[in-house]
Structures are given as structure tokens and as C-alpha cells.
Length: 215
Image (cartoon, rainbow, N blue to C red; front, side):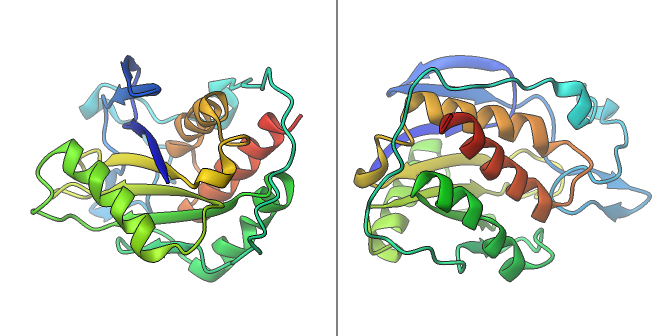
């Protein structure tokens, strides 16, 4: 496996490994009238306390498109819909959301895997979280054809931005290359603060990425 990019929502980019790190300016989730939205901002309310406003799909204008012609990966890995692990309770229907990611697999040949990890006080640094993600892939995924998206929640899960990492299997580098992953992060930016549920948000992120990088 190759761990290449670490990502947190925001706009400040710096070079790290072969990709970029972005630092957060606002929280992942909003508390509205005492009720916490599900994973992303479903209410469309203003995030004025963090200096950012919720993103609406029509406002983001994400036009990310690939400049590279890619061939669908042939890894011998069959699609597995059991590919969403949610320790935060953000995904309403884990099984259905996992099934919805098959379109990404059909287009790219890459098995997606999403892991929302609960806060772990023992992971005190970004490098420890990166190492955890790499080790988790090795210990829990038995192939080299998977793209793992792992989110680490903070102690104040509802208000503090977590840490995001991806891990590539060796067999999918020709598809999920640096440009493709940059496009993936662009769609994370676009949909995370949209009015979509967490379930639909994940589907849109992965399927929009596939549409963009396989053209």
C-alpha cells in the first residue's frame, strides 16, 4: 500500500510527500437548535461561528476534469458492498451506501472503502494517524485494489474538524494517481458542506470522481 495524501477541509495547501495537505477553517458538523446534523450540513444553515458558510452544490462550481487518459484497473478484486465502516453514526444506511459505491468500482475498477473512525486519544499526532491508516489497510484489507478513505474524528466530534487520509493499494496507482486524488479532494470540498445526507454525500463524492477521472 502507498499512503500519499493527508487532507483536512480548508484552502491552505502545502507540499507533503507527493500530494498536498489542506488545513481546516471550519467544523465538519453543525449543531442547530440542539440537534446535530448527520455528518455534513444537511440543514444548509450558516457556519458563521467558524468563519465559513455552508456550501451548496450550485455555488461551488467544481469543474474538476482529468487531463490524463486512464484505463480501468484490472486488479482481480470483485466489488464488495461491505465497504463502509461508521463508528460515528453519521451514515443512516450503511448497507445501501456501500452498494451505491459500486458505480465508482464499475467505472474505475477500484474497490472503495470508507472508514469514519471515532476519536482515539492515543493518536496524538498526524503522523500517528497516517501510520494507523497504513497499518489498518494491511491488517483489514486483503488486496491491493482498494482505495481507503479514512476520517479520524476529534474529541469534540460535532464541532472540530477531523483528519482525513487515503491509502492506495499498489494495483490502483494507474487510476488513483496524484491528479485523480486531487480531484477526489475537490469533490470532498464540494459536497461535504452541501445539504446532502452523509449517505448521499459519499455517493456523490465517489461517483463524481469516477466521472471526472475516467473521461
